[in-house]
Length: 483
Image (cartoon, rainbow, N blue to C red; front, top):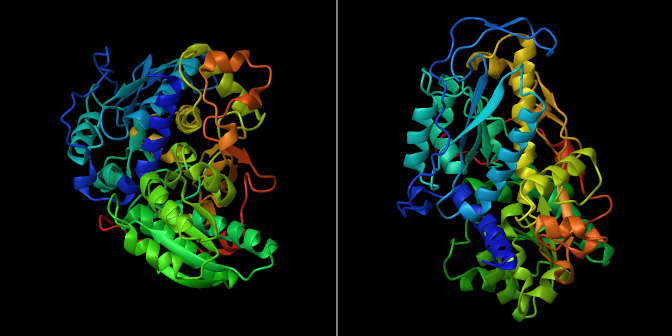
């Protein structure tokens, strides 16, 4: 498959996360693909005793351990989708995590121990996620000390309460606001802003665009049903209320995933809206956006990050998407700045995976790796790398993402620690040009390549609006049925 086709497939899969993040179990893949369970440990046991340490590694001479940590190895579990509907997204994301751990081990690991990723493929099936969770949470040599990534909101929801009982730190590949709820997501450590906050910032940005045209903002909100869609829709409506924006069409939960959107399009076109916030997948965004534009609907658009795919820039939609749509997300995109974190990631990925195409999702995998390193390092410095010790470390550490994402801690109340900054990018079909990492490295003008057609907007990458800044977070914006 060509790099171009691989990238389009990747970006389209990312857009499909929208449905998955809020969907029911029947949205998961049932293709029966064989698990890519790749990392069975060679360690014969984990130690319940204190382990001796080198005196010059920054850690205490003795470290308490229980499961997933031996004298020379730290086992970190990953449950990505490597064979289901999101494999083209999570496979390169997981590659970035693997490269991160490779580079970490080259630097000596954590407290003299090498980090061993134990990767079990969920196929995006909730039952398989539960099965793999049970395997990785074992209280023997097969167990891990933490979960560095688990794909999907329904998958994470299915294990959230058990992870709390097991003291197993879990990093969700999901931005549902419920992870900040200590009663539900107490062992889940979300990275970046949630869907709700993202929508608040996005609506405030759209308001500025409408007002710059000399118009009064009139908002339409469209979303899938479920955790993903309704968390985003809730944030958009909270922003409208806080900013005095007229809500002319409330389509929360009214976008049927993968179905005919004629009814939604008709209501949108007749609403008089001049700004639209959508929380969906790319295919449905394309259908609604294209259908509305074809009927003369004129408005500024944005939506939660999984709504957008660069595939939408091809064909007839490209010019209109470039003119009206703005891409919102939770972190910087591939080589979009010259921060220390970006420089390190670009150099490491280019060296380790030169034949792979440039991809924005590398940043997400890299950030997750940075979180794992920071928490393990803090636990080692505390002299306690038991699972409970990892939880304690996660609750006190502040992670420096080196410019890739807002620095973050999980100290205090959810209202104190949730991230309120998001990133908003302009879209330009003319700059979309995926190349391999090796070809990218050879370019004198790096702007000649783009993974997604996104261009940073001065003052909005990152951005926190007044509504998000003032928002008092006391509970999830949308309450999951699992909570």
